[in-house]
Image (cartoon, rainbow, N blue to C red; front, side, top):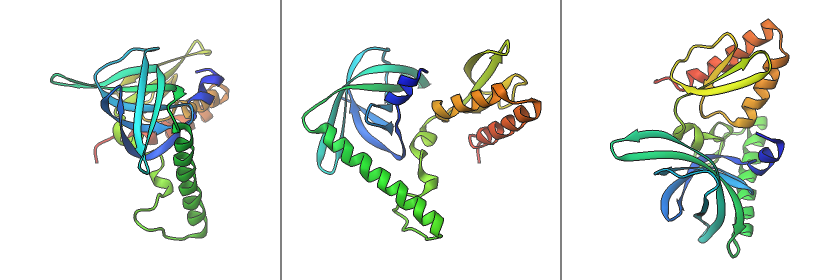
Length: 214
């Protein structure tokens, strides 16, 4: 992913999914930012397709036209297909931009309150966001594992896998991990010595363990 893509898709790691519609069909918003969203929905779509995402906030409807940036099928059950899709916003409808700014400001305020409470040792109400909640929407919906392998010491390849073992030339993590975090891990792996790479695989193994049945 290019630096510009990372800027466009800088998203909030939502604690809980937001129910909305994707081209008129029900969808769960798992991550959300000023430039785009990451959603779960039934059916399949294609990259670069024009689309519309709509969801409520404080009695208002937030509506954005957008373009599908990437999409992949995550599970098939009978005749039902469930996909995860990244959307790049291209146009805000009516006052949607200001409503989105209000939503994000509210969410960020909750994160800062959780950070302060954590630092001060304060226990928040049950309904209040905690640091452990951040990213919960994505963790609860994205299944499986991703394997990253460094080929010829310079090119990364990645694929989905059901094998929890750590490869000797890379690492395996939970599929819900964020692209920007994985890019950082790849860069760290590239410059690490053998002991450093072993420690990175230990960190990756902790990620894998969070996907195992409890």
